[in-house]
Image 1 (cartoon, helix red, strand yellow):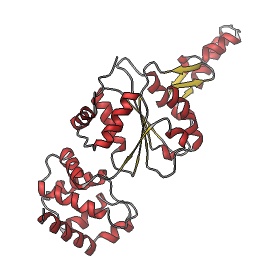
Image 2 (cartoon, helix red, strand yellow; image 1 turned 180 degrees about the vertical axis):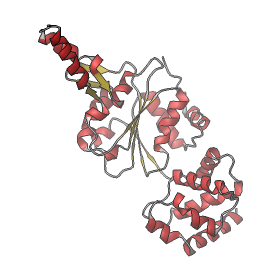
Image 3 (tube, one colour; image 1 turned 135 degrees about the horizontal axis):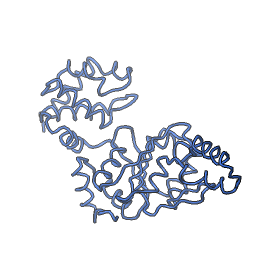
Image 4 (cartoon, one colour; image 1 turned 180 degrees about the horizontal axis):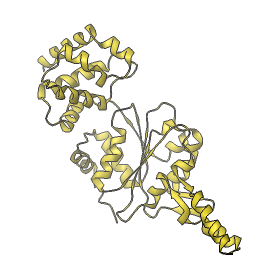
Amino acid sequence: MSLALPDNIDDTLALLSRENYVADRSLATTLFLALKMGRPLFLEGEAGVGKTEIAKVISAALGCRLVRLQCYEGLDIASAVYEWNYSRQMIEIRLTEAAGDVDKQGLSSDVFSSDFLIERPLLQALRGNENGPSVLLIDELDRTDEPFEAYLLEILSDFQITIPEIGTIKATQPPIVIITSNRTREIHDALKRRCLYHWVDYPSAERELQIVNAKLPGIDTKLSQQVVAFVQRLREQDLFKSPGVAETLDWADALTQLDKVVLDSDAIDNTLGALLKYQDDIARIRGSEAAQLLEQVKLELANV
């Protein structure tokens, strides 16, 4: 089954917009090229800026199965690619021996067949399904170690996996691969060279306001403007972790749940935990600092 890929950058922007993802033209261009060229897309940026969401949006928009590999320290082949079902293999061996079959070579071939193979995300993505290729999300690659990166090179170059007991499994329909990194460490150049790269930055105030209104259509207009302006100013502060778009949406939603239509100092102080995730940051902003930022926001919006 062939996918109906966007024909140009404008179509790509429209495809993302239909799934309520507000992208800038630079990101849409890189995504369009990755889809057309069949290359993995490597997205790097701060946490919470919408990198993972891209894979979910593409999967939904194109009607593809999403296969997600959540990376972590110590991730190995057994968890990411495949492993053998050893308990089933042992049962098969004992049943064969009990039946008096002593063909060891044949038995070895039988128990190391695909019937006893447990497919993990990477192999699942290469296999695809009757609905066409999968969208493979390799999320937060920077959490893994360099040996796992090296293992990915064969997959990203040739869309194939080599299993010693079986041989090489090559994708008949290569998956759409999206890799994300929060840049807690540098990813090796050999892996980046196999991808199209894009840095996902914090959005401008105008685009962040579009995102809030798209994701929270019921929010009061004045509140959404104040929330975005406040977050934009907050990112200018010397914080341990600046809020991402995900935190902006959480905060706006929390204020809406509290029936707020405008920002006030008490509401900010009481809901900072939805916006900031470190106590030192909260303690620094809460109180007079938050009140000062709010006044700046009100003056800024009054002059618009």
